[in-house]
Amino acid sequence: MFKGVVKDLGHIPYAEAWAIQKSLFHAGIDQKLKQELPVHHLLLCEHPHVYTLGKSADAQNLLISKAELAEQNIDVFDIERGGDITYHGPGQLVVYPIFDLEQLGIGVKAFVEKVEQCIIDVLQLYGIAAERIPNRIGIWIDKDLPNERKIAAIGIKCSRHITMHGLAFNINTDLSLFNQIIPCGIVDKGVSSLAKEIGREIPMSDIKNQMVNAFSRIFELQF
Image (cartoon, rainbow, N blue to C red; front, side, top):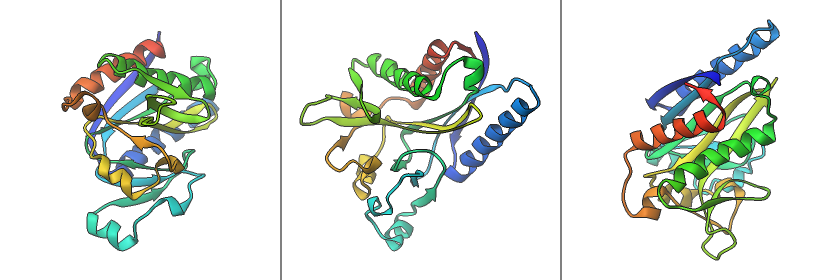
């Protein structure tokens, strides 16, 4: 088992969590340059309303004006992860693994697959069968059916085998905020949440514990 540290950041503005990520990310790279072993960090949090645009984002996928953003008190950030535009907000669990993939003995593709498996395993606890879709990073329900919908998004950055950014898992999320963007640039698919799928809200503390357990098991990490 590898050693890891879990930090629950609670409700935290996006910019603050991003700064914490970058600090841990660059510290990990510095440690590797000194031939030291970085510590694996798992950050869990919720953000106020925010839209983030990844490196391949199309600005046209943000469907509302700056005035409307200001009126709704929604921030927008251009960030260094892969992917297009997505939404973060209250009721959504965001998880940032700052991991050293070299220590873990895996590449980026395997890392993403393991992150996806963590989400799939947590959904199984609630009787929901979710799947991957080739060439569409994230987790989907009712794959290949007319109402195919996305319940979790994944976007990462990796440099010198250190990862940052991560996953956004809709738990008790207000899904109407996705109507103001084209999520991940996909125009013809819906989004969902765990609460919508099972008809009741779930304590975020339950999901956090289940997600930490999944990461511990799948990545062989002792937090």
